[in-house]
Length: 554
Image: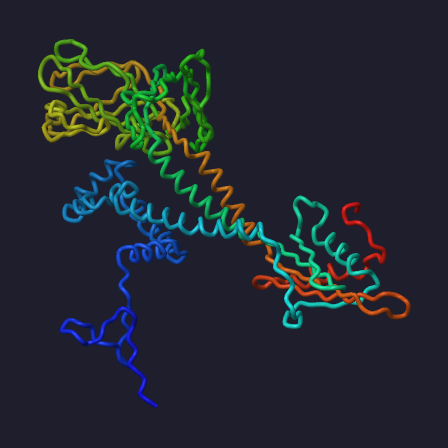
């Protein structure tokens, strides 16, 4: 026998020329074909749309969202971000460049988000197509051997094979034919033999697909909400109003697709604010009575309470906070009114000890004036200190320190209205060098030190902090969340079962026809109810009538 010629893969040349590829020999490494651009893209797509990668991306999304909960974020608290940058001069700027202070708008978070979206779409669509084909298909035919099934049974009955099949079909389909318990198919593979194939549990896969589609809907809704939502905060004083325009907000944040000029121009006036406290200063109720005027409608009265927002212009208006806003008038040294208006003081504790700053820039003579102080709603003054004992304004008192100089308002740098930049100011002091402290009661006028003018406390109205939120994706988020919960429940608790009956007509015995019924059942995974399901069908078959009856008439 001549030796076998060496194997040469198709397309490879022999070593007849100087540039020919040497022939493959036994033991040589396998020569793999080049993927090329199309093959590489196909391989990448298959990896991206695999369930393994989808789960990894979901976990990665949870990991990259952690900095948004740990670090301060620009949209929620720009002041906290500024303090973090000031306290961490080395690490802070690098985190800022990488987007860690606006995580959910960063490039890397968006990349993971979009990859997860694409992966879910690539996973769901093929499964949905396969599931729809399986739903329309007939149940699988009965296997040839029932002996290999762990759950099986056999019975001999007097009814004909057609009567047995009709009885089995009735119990498998159930009472509601349009929503059958089992999908049933009856075939006759040979003379005297009837096979019943039944299958249920397609809702398991339907629930699983519904869950993933709902998860996809949640991702789309969140992304849409980020683009179309806006949120703003405003402080409104009793007797004053608020218009839904950017200029009236103290802080305003909008999505990338929101046009500030498209805000619904409703107006809201705070008529009165009432609060109720217990004897130990615990809050019982906060109530803001407002008058709402929407475009094309008559003004109407409404009430805003905690956790009971007002709907206006398609947005929700929440009662976020409240406090006191002393009505003050400052006359400068020339007797001119340099400042007149209400100044919100922010509560710091349960008894509404409040801090505030009064900035008087319009002084006709001399330096600008800054007043920093504390408002005590129910003040108790001792030789050592002054404190508030109740949140109600039973004995209100203002305790102020006085500063003069340059407020820094003309430098064009935004300032916090609740803080005083004293770097270019001088605090007023007594002859012994101690700081001047003013104690002012409502209706009282006091002289400012160093001939700066006078201060008059005219009244003590209340203020409310309103939080307005508009997010058109919230109803969709709720709907998709409910669908996801229902789909997951159906997927977890719906059993997937297959059941077969082979009905064979036996020879006559004792003057009566005998029919042998063999049954088997199979489930996907562990199913403790599978044996009972088969037993229920076999019990019905044993009790089948011997006379054939039309299935539809029953």
